[in-house]
Image (cartoon, rainbow, N blue to C red; front, side):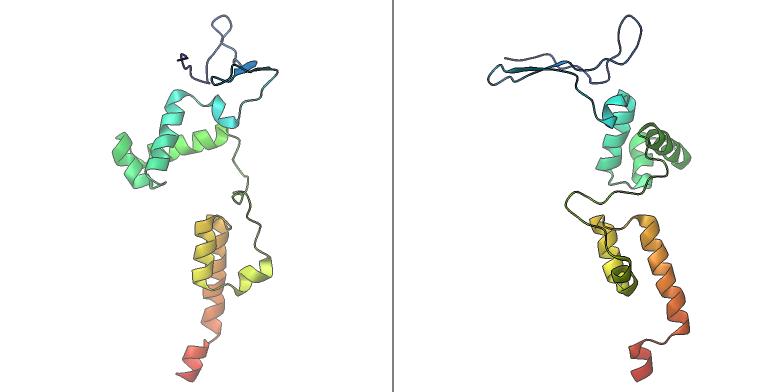
Length: 153
């Protein structure tokens, strides 16, 4: 049976409060589940904010591409990102590792090559800030020490 789809961010027509789902229905078998369901953090975003996030994903996070896609300036894109980040309560929180991955021990990060650090960044094991910190600390240590290639060559 075809159902009318509604946006999850629907407001009460009487008081403009947030509406929450109370009944879930399976289209295949008709099973109904009733209760107090909690929406995830994305349910609080407006349609415009969800569109912005879709563009962000489509552009793979490249702000310059987002500027062109949305027809806005760099500061406007950064402002929208900051606003959504704040609304999702992500400000000041570390970037979580994807499910199933564990934190890399500090000693393993200290001995990692720059390529390994970049691989950890790409896989989500390290945040951008942590990767930059590690690479900069390796660069500083490298200035005072000669590598094996420099010594033998």
